Amino acid sequence: MNFVNRHFPDREVTDHVGPGPILSRQRKWPLRYDSIEYVALCADIATIVFASVVSMWLCQARNGWAAGDLSNTLGLALVSAACLVCLLKTHGLYRPVELLVLRNQIRAVCMAWMSLLLFMWAVYGFAIRPGPSEQVGPLFAVLGLGLLVAERWAVKALLGRGLSGRKFATTNIVLISDQPPSKHAGLSETLAMHGYSVMGRFSLPPTGSGPTCRRRLTARVIDYIRTCQLDQVVVEADPERWPELRAFVADLRVLPFPIMFVPVGTTSELLRHPTRNLGSAVGVELQRGPLAPLECAIKRMIDLIGAGLALALLAPLLALAALAIKLDSPGPIFFRQQRCGFNGQIFLIRKFRTMHVLEDGPVILQANRADRRVTRVGKWLRRTSFDELPQLLNVLDGSMSLVGPRPHALAHDGQFDKLVRNYAFRRRVKPGLTGWAQVHGCRGPTPTAAMVERRVQYDLWYIDNWSLRQDLAILMRTPLEVLRGRNAY
Image (cartoon, rainbow, N blue to C red; front, top):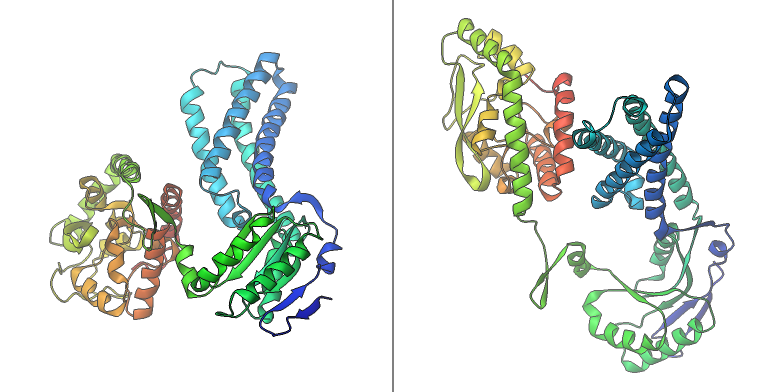
């Protein structure tokens, strides 16, 4: 870029000022970066309404429709659209950074759409009269989901093209930084991709330069800003020099523009964590605590409903498995073993017996692919993970949850705690019947420290990023992972 480099006489402050000619001459789209979220939201509403009209139109030739049928369908479509966008908006799925992850978008849209349809059917299903409005429902469900997925693909393609080509109408800023000039190019590129155009650059004086250098820099910044069209002032600096920055920002208050501070350095890591108000003070949440009371209640309700329904539906298969175990080899039907649960509390886990032995001591040998301890029936039960289903009783009694880190035997728990530094952090939530690590293939034995560490990383990510949507996604992915049969023996 053709910037004009000017130096203070004492060389304590260096200014790099000039417009961004390459950025300013690019052809922009008539859309600001901060408007992308609302455009995507409106696109979802329009897509759902369009799907309802097309569905009604396809049924018209066969059955005919009345004005009341069309109005009822459009009304339900608007209600569905409002509920869907509120659900996705709550989880931050309209942010540009989220819209670029197509896989997560499709999974979230499918789950939200199916949940919404079930809710709408439960609320309005009995109120809909037989006729075209009833027949259009299944078509609207399928067409709406298909169009939403296609729309997500189009949004991702257009957004990626716009960001990479810096096509969005930009916000003009002046960048004031204490970082070396070599780092300016990377920051400018990042800002340009997200809708900002760096019109000018100034370098902050070195630490301890004194008020004279600060006033000279302030005068130059003010003189430059008053001669150009500007939207914001961005100050990039180390928070450790905040006393100097506070005085500098106070000098810039004569400007009628917002001033944004971008922290760099080790201290800036604190600002990446969420904040909480502690009376008149502001606290930084360095570690997420246990789930809030409402979140615990929702998760517990899902556990009770899910475990109860699963036991009721699978009761015949569970009885057949119990009979097969009893006829196949001598010994009890169930195997109970001590495991470490929430907050380090010990509980007895329930499983179908799949081996000739019942190990629950200080030394337990993990099962391997050709383990002779496994019975004939046990081999099939372990391969399909059917031997884990009695743990639904643990879910009902509250010692486990449907989703969470898988508990290990006490003997292995002590070994893993020594191998992986953060292993004990898994105990901040209840152990689960399935988990984020399991749907990523981390099942079966863990003979190496690397395998244990990989599983722990997945578990800790789940704990730090827990959401109801995440739990539902894991429950839906678990049957597919069981069918794949990775590391299950």
